[in-house]
Length: 411
Image (tube, rainbow, N blue to C red; front, side, top):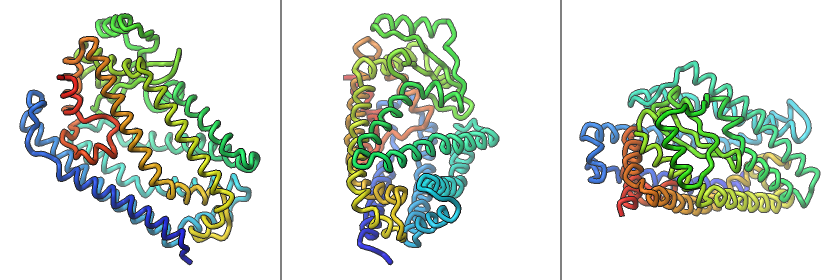
């Protein structure tokens, strides 16, 4: 029997899918066959044509995979699939924690398996066709199995702790749950590169030479103590280049992809690192962490309000007559979607502002031109979309577009 809450859930899912579909349509319509003037020196006509083909291939892939995912989700709700999985889990195990673990385990691994053809097509057809993929099928299998194991250990452990806290803490659940998530967030920020990355990639200290000397010289110039500078073997999976900053305090480190080193000049790499150091100097990492923790606190508070009072209604909306923590999480996750969308927009606005400021830090130290050159090259080598629709950027981009950043650097 379909309840009023059931139709509220369906309405939210349909509206969310409709919004994403409109944004994708606008983004596709905004793709320009004319090469923007700011990058005419880096893209030739043939290369830009290839970029447009790559964009269209990904758009079509996103449309098919998105519709497939939406249809599967609708079937799960209309056919009471979540109640079926819940009953299946209860027939196998007993106890709230074990039932929840089996319930989410079935959902996660089943979804991963039915989505795997899409992952394989994306990696070994689209990325392969445009020269990006370096991953072997054997490495794909290893990554998948490692991901499954890591999800079982970390995801299962976190879920178990949350249910224990919920059963034990009562009205203080939201405070203790929030504290747990805050601890995990900070811990992962500090030790992600030490604990998680090595499971998938090899990190080695950047060897002595011109590049390291140039980086250390710049760090000394701006008063940034850098003890951990690593190179990661990103080329084992893709030709796309990247760099990132992680950690806090003594655990902070900068990681360069080997593809970045092979793509950019020494001065351009220093400019990219100046941008990353700019984030640290302007305390962007701490600000974003603070906002993220506040967001987590709001989520746990709202969750605590509805768990006790509405958990039976949540279960009935999914076709079950047995209230449970895990079924309530499913419904709450959908009901929270509008709030999550608004918060996501706010976080993206904040993130784009931070990116401009980090670019400005590099510019203040005379690296505007090499940073602009690096951005052009990274865009060109990854065939990124140069003309996304403003609405799509507003909703989804955590970074300003390439042209926006170039114009800002050239002011």
